[in-house]
Image (spheres, helix red, strand yellow):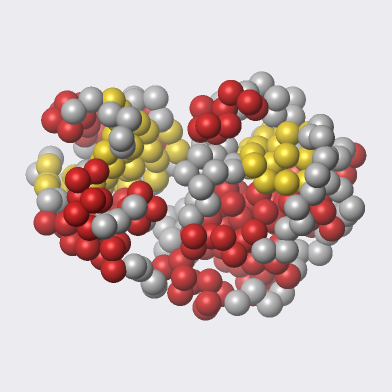
Length: 312
């Protein structure tokens, strides 16, 4: 249950905040983190966002955030469904989170106060309400951060998680002056040539399974090197398999240097992506989820295909 007023009261009552995002940060976790940070700083509180490797397309979210020197007292997590998703920050912050704000259908974070709303299309929807209940105007850079998180987690409002409430919040943010066309162009309509080469390679290697109801692409380390691309360029490719007509479940394998494969699953609502990934220790949303599997490409594919057989 999400007690937004309780979360707002907690944030007003404390100070010296460190706000945690999940590893491999996306627009929703970063938008949530920096919107909350700006809101707290506007109230005269100390706050900073603890994150890693911000993708260059999201660096603009950090603008306007003051660098503050203080000893942290209050730890808050945003868009983090499980402490293991903190990545390199897990050891330092595990068991220390005091307030968890999240929208995943399964949340395993241990915190005294949790504000979890799985009906929210994006975590930034929850922050929209909490920040307003804190008495902070949702405008300016705060609104930009929230819009970015909502737009990216809904695929520019085309995914099935988009609700009428999502659209009403987005409308309020636009009314406040958010430059939506400029943000949308950066988020959805612009790609590097390196990413384009990577996409071409992904399409060439795409394979179909389960009577063509499942499409699978693999991004290997070698493909990244040949394209002159970075891991950041591979972001967003997970949507490719699900775009094919007749495909109910799209799976993307991204080889990592540590011998694991990062698995991203996109599905229709009848094939639960979160339940699928939970088989491998992962999770997420009904239509978008992920996990990591260790093994060779052949071993990982065999395990995934067996799970697809049971799911579809």
